Length: 209
Image 1 (cartoon, rainbow, N blue to C red):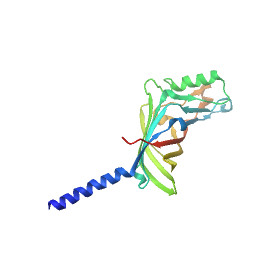
Image 2: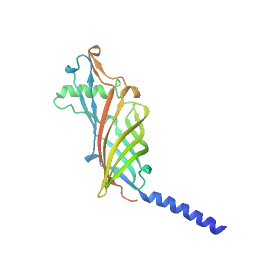
Image 3: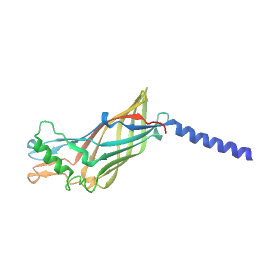
Image 4: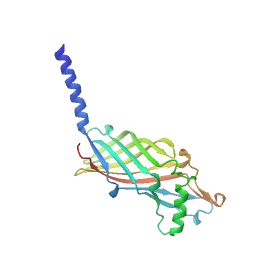
């Protein structure tokens, strides 16, 4: 009986070790990654309003990647809300600064109260592999403006030479997170509720402890 118990314990430890070994930890390379938000306009006089492009300047993240069993993989992303920067090519510095102040202020992101935007994945599904690339669907929780909601979106990933890259886009409604879309002129021009986030992430294998 002792032998049977020992064999069972050894098998369990081996299974756990094998699972851990199959996963590789990666850290985001923010300097070579990008995260952009497209803010669209609507309303009767939308031709006189501006659509906005916002980029994240300060973000970090990590990935636990299991190439053999992708559903065991996970990702975490953290964005410093104050680092979100209005780019708006073609607009004046004054206009950009005004939009920036509104975006970070109490009426929109309220970064003083909610300093971080955080995404934690909860599941990987519909993974299709083609060589060293995958197409998959990622589900997770997005914490924004003090509200946490479930989001699901497709992305593509590639592993090459110790570098993991991923790109995709996700759409969400501001009102789902308690944010009221900005409007001017009594609503003649206003920001659409639905925003688009596009990302391209480069990550490198973390050094072993």
